[in-house]
Length: 143
Length: 414
Image (cartoon, rainbow over all chains, first blue to last red):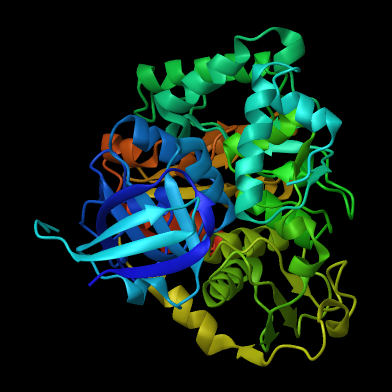
């Protein structure tokens, strides 16, 4: 069943992808092995999983400013998430998404986005419209 | 966003491509946060370590630096955060020639852009502290939270590209911490036990950051009698920003915007949460490792002040770093030069420790240098660094500066 989730207008282009969801936070510096394309911080709820080409759905951004450079560097190597959805972004991830040309949205009207989307859902992220469409479970989910 | 004539001209490319890019980038970010217009800034400070920049970021800086001087040079004083490579000491750490080459390219590009390469995350202790009410565009979360909270300046967390955009144009979108309404307390904590030492303040900061958990929460603390020192505030703020992405705190009766609780509250104060010994020990317990052998002891994050450098030298007096352990001390080029003149660097190095200038351990390819040296068990007095390095393949542990030095000398965590 298709669901439409309204949010604040975001940054970057309209994209479609498969969701990877956790009730956890995000920093490119703290949490990722950017060469391997996986979450590497042992305590992170997505530890060991690949984020490449996924639509990451997480609670909020944390930690330092490095993510602003890192998202573009990851994107240019083809080792980046396709989009990031937060309950609340911080300034750094918004700036980094703008610099990388990556889709990013936050502030969802219907509540906690990490509970409204499930890992494996196929979603369309439309930042200029402030709209995320959940198409339902992807058939080729492999995480 | 409302743009004035000058900003519209820059966006149209009339002041050159670097400034056109800068306005375009900032408008995109400003719209996300509903900025009404731009606000002039007095300074900018850019995080640009090569580990974060990568080839993509360095090539971007070089692209801007290739424009004529009148188009590329920054319009307000602009400083830099720690670098990824100390070019006077990188081979012994296991850093590669490729890393050094990327570093040299970055330095050349930044210099051509007119940026002052201060390579410091303690600029507020060493270079030029901002004035209360001054709007600035700072990178490094530790610099931002200290300058917002302790000095009453106004900055958002600015990633490298946005800090550069602010430097190139002398302005930043007016949102977040530039607005009075986002500087009011949203969380309230009553501290029942005053922290001890830099690590104790770091633990309190980390705990409050974790409890706040978002850029948009502003904690106010009660129960702190008398001002903490500059270094205590430094570790407190850096840990809070690291654990929670928190850019501003108030301490009632201490920090400038909070002469009392009511001054930072709109209407009734938020419900208080008590923080005492049990809560602090809860966080500290995540980073305990008493009795373990230690591979590397790190003093960094933030870079050490003159006072911390002198204390490390004093603690190392009559001791030598153990043969199976390394001791790495990171400070700014400014502090290092002073401490060389004062004989402090010589005393630290004579004990077998390494003093790195203009870097900070976690943003200088920590994963690669850990693998090159076989470092896994890491000990530090910095709550910020033990929070970060778990994701870099280390097993980080926390101890006071005194116990860190003892561990470095004996090879084992006391």
